[in-house]
Image 1 (cartoon, rainbow, N blue to C red):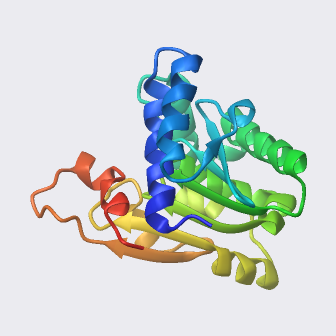
Image 2: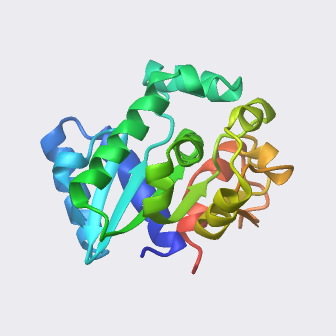
Length: 219
């Protein structure tokens, strides 16, 4: 299973993957970077939204965050901010893709997931809405996830046992002062919250929101 900082590195690799000019170069970049971590890229099950990588028996799935140059992501940000993610195609498509990936690998794999920002919101919603995914996944890390009160109130309510299981599996990581995930320090639907200080006391909002704090952690 990946450590916290490894999950954050995979999320960062996925962002840079998105920026490559074509799929061939994107795959080449991700394969090289993941290879240094002992992972192999599953090219068939990787795109700008979902990255899949394997290491021994571990199948790791990452959801990318907001690409500000992609209007589709901006619409999804608005949907989560207003608690309307149930109607948003991107939330549905990533959930469907994750089910397909897990079915293709089977039930004897060790599944883990990670996501940053918008991706974290989609991951939280996915685990709440899909019984098959939450039963298969063993560990999930979100980083500075988009989280508002309206989003929280729109997440399906799980029963006591389901919530207990997700509390064991899911960890939310946020930097203090990050505005995107600010509501998390008031309430989360499930999982455990860990908060971090940014090493630079003068850091701006963009620096607080990025992945570097988590990549630099030794967890």
